Amino acid sequence: FKLFSTVFISLPLVYGSSCPVLDCWFVQERKGRGGGLTGATSQEKSLLRIRRDAHSLGAEAQRQPASDISPDRVYDVTDPAATLCHPALSAPRGSIHKPQCEINPFLPQPSTLKWATALTDSALSPVYLQADWLSVSLQGLDGQLIQSSIMRAPTATKEPQVILSVSSKTVSVKSRLGEPVLLDCGFWTDSSSPLSGSGFAVEWRYQFRGDGRLVLAYDGKTDRLAEMQEEGATLDFEGLHEKGNASLILQEAKVRHSGTYICTVFLPYLLAQVAMDLEIVEPPSLSIYPSPLPLAVPGQVVTVHCEASGFAPLSLEVSWEFTGADGTSRSLGSGSLTGHRQAWDGTYSQRSKLELDTSKLDLGRGGEVTCVAFHSGGTQRASVTLNVIGNVTPSIEDSMAMVGVALVLYGLIKLVSWTFISGNK
Image 1 (cartoon, rainbow, N blue to C red):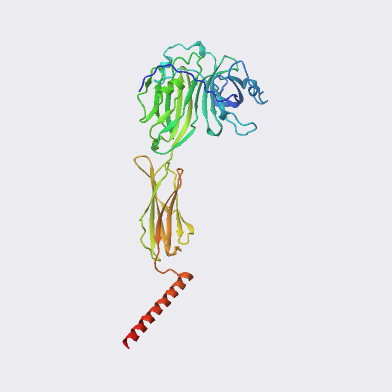
Image 2: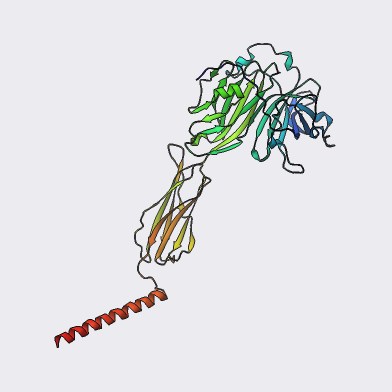
């Protein structure tokens, strides 16, 4: 891959002219009598009043906290890049739906991961770390945004400043098989912080039902990728260094890609991460056999099979319908469904069998038998024609037509007979 310098340019992500006041929960572990952590957690209502510089508060940001919020949990946050001012974090006035916000104490420490250890090659911790550090996790309205920010406040103050922000606008993604997938992840660092000039690292990790694996890891300080890298996964390295674009690109979606992806950005002693979900959705292909169906006679049992193949995820419902010659449709049930089979590419197949007993079902002269498959990727249908011959009660119109044909035939016979007799005289 192309080599780049280790300089990262912090670009402000300005979303709008006003910044919100965020209602949050401050969550931390309880301390026991001896000062140790008990494992239990406590929750306190908190308020974040966002401003773009340390010397101003907008009209909204001057809002006084509610009576059930302790003054110790009101923070006046300086956010130079307005990373906390995204429209998805501003609830309409009077709305009961609000962004989700959680604040936790944060402890700066060097990373032990080999792609991030170069960020803290010095054994000394800078004096800059001697402060109160907080981590803020946010989820925007309607799943538009997820964000994680690390903030630093001078000791014993309630005026933190955003140092690192990581966000994603692809909270939940669906993709068809074989298509390229982009999982958004962007980050910003405060250029005035002494930690922002020492490089960065990015890690993408996959999790699904307890299983996890490293997808990609990149050391931005030494410009190296980790040796373990998933095939077909890459980054836009130029955008990464110039714009903080750490988005993951999967060149070809496969069933095994469905799961949760975690984007983590490292600075010296700091990290922030966001998680997003990817689901590979492929609708089934349907086939009915035998096709065409053999002619059926009253009392005969006709067996029809419907095979759904190449679909993902696993969940599938199958039903059968019959449409008569008069256009009337009715349900024939779900038939008997076999278990799932998994193909080499991870997709699934399943078969349904329907037995049509012409002695119990009023199928008339036949009609159209349809297999319907309901799947998250879309509803699919396949049909085949059924013809029933034999003892079928004719309609009044058919009876009248048959009488008419009989009279015509009788007349022709009489005419031929009379002509023949007359010719022999």
